[in-house]
Length: 392
Image (cartoon, rainbow, N blue to C red; front, top):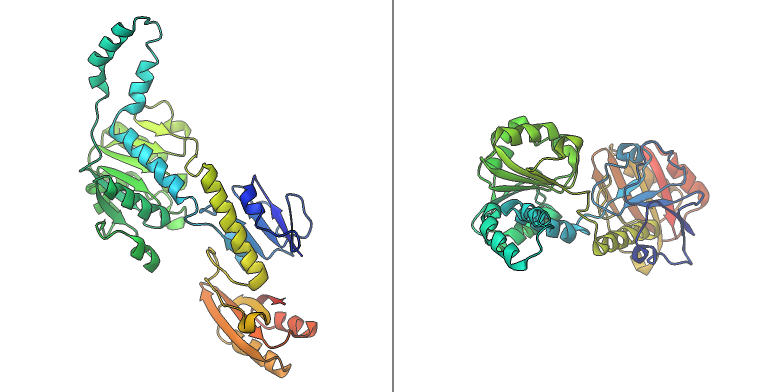
């Protein structure tokens, strides 16, 4: 029986993935084997000794002390792409709001409450509507910063609208490159993209290299009159630099999902209350993906969409043999020492896989018969082994 501790309101569609025969799932639970959460901040919480994994129903993991979890060999999962369509659709709304003064026109209409004659109102609106005229998106240029699951969908959407699309992503993966439409023109640096874009949409994670990547220096290179859209993370933008660029006339408008005090009560800022992934469908997709990833890891040791461990997937040898998994410091000799230990105890290896990521290595070994408890205890004492499990 595995114990899953939940934080926040997790979609019932995700919770229903856990069978009652093998899982106990609750917000208050002792000795948890895994955490399932959305936005709960864990930086000040103790890490249980029983914890094996954590899954965040969402893409970012800035609410999780990943480094601390890594030191204990705890796998941290996220759900990239599960909320991509929800964010993509809101980016479309932002582009439309940024190209035409829709919100200004709607606000103006609400000021006409003292008028009672429909004909008079219609005549006035015909006269005043030119104040809210804008431009079409077709033929304009959108720069997409970050070409992962969401960024590639935004690029594809913009192409379908008849826009020209530029892309920049210094860490573009092979899988992401395959997803990217061929019509996207890749730029070699951020400044080049900003200089040639009418609109720019940000889709990078909040990590050390991206902190305040949009700042005074980068905005100085922006095309005059550019509209900046940020539905990624607040930390990638310096809000004070945004205000300076808006007041200097270089940046025309900032549309974001992350309000800050300095951005309020400005006609050139449209700020939303962090609703990019707030759709019923996105929350269900994230919860289901997170639950499935946790179950596959807890039951089979497989890892998919981890932010701190390598991706590893190995089918069970002979349909269901005993399986040993262990993680270790990524140094030479550890796997050899473990295999020698198994050989000394006459544990026959059927199949295995070894992968590494940064300072961590992870191993799955299928064996002919389950080893005695003493063998697992000895394995855990091998130098540089962080933790180990036997999955029957």
